[in-house]
Image (cartoon, rainbow, N blue to C red):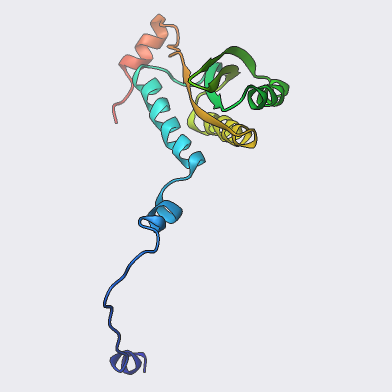
Length: 156
């Protein structure tokens, strides 16, 4: 029965034209801000691992945020200070009010994505733009036993 229905059904497409070029791509396929930051998080976490970081230790993580006004920046500072962030530096350049904040956090993908999601949303609430984060590489102290474990670790 379904095949008979489809055999009698006819259609044609002459031309498809978007009212706003690329609107479908940007509205449906292009990642939103939070997802773009998660993609960047994965890249930074992968780089930390490449440099020997096991990501098992909490560390100071610096974050950059930009605002169009000092008032917005100050309101944001009040909010994040309550959540344990420290103010490291701030400046004004080309009409943008920058802020560098830090907090001790874990840098594994799940943990850091939770932090960046929070900061992206908090920055947006105060008309700001979260720009990203950085952390020093933490290599676990090399000792005799640690060296042996790595030497005899099965390769994947």
